[in-house]
Length: 284
View 1 (cartoon, rainbow, N blue to C red):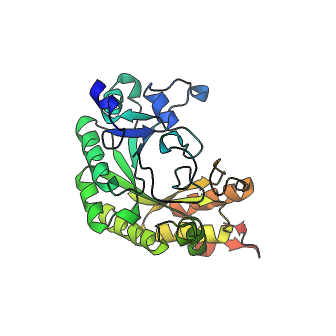
View 2: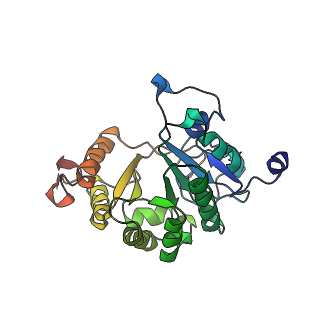
View 3: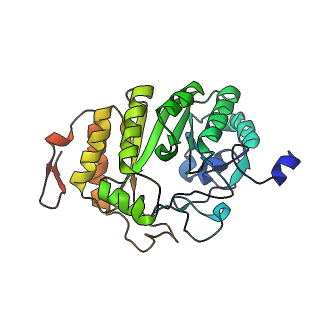
């Protein structure tokens, strides 16, 4: 173990954990408010070279100043630990409440290969269901099949932006990034074919400049493929390109969150909703 700790801390031997995950595994100090418990443990692949993407809002962006190891992500710290240690701690009694592990890729040439290794080890050495937040830029449909063979039960795809224009402005060519809108939606269709209804979904971020009509339409597009959406609220990350932008309006986020729930669980759909001249939801 001492020899392992002296090496470059790259995946698959090492992974980053969200601060909450590290606290859950007693790898970081702290307590949860009102004794809350974390039921999904988030792991992030890590490489000394960092991520080659350059998303405007992301703490891991290629052009964000600072060493990759010290960069925050979604405004929290992600300490690095060996995968051996993570698996050992997952099998302790104090982690018995963990119901799912989610492995997140970054944009790196080894990310798929290493995700498969990490997923197989977790499948073999724990009894916890596994999800992967995949990176469509570096995988294809055959890779979804390999992920399923490795024991992955669900996949997510971080489209993030509700429209093609906003995607390109913040993730694509306009920020010198490698991601393409069309490829992300192709990947959602591939995930639908391989993993099936309700076993895949998207991440979308409310507050990147879209209106509520555009976001509701994107959520409906995911649902029409058979997936569900995890909705996030934009809040600027220090040091990112969007560091000086305002957070998402809370009213906007709450209306979209309700729309997402109604669409994802088939209680309503985009065609039944009404919007005002500014694209704000007026009827669900």
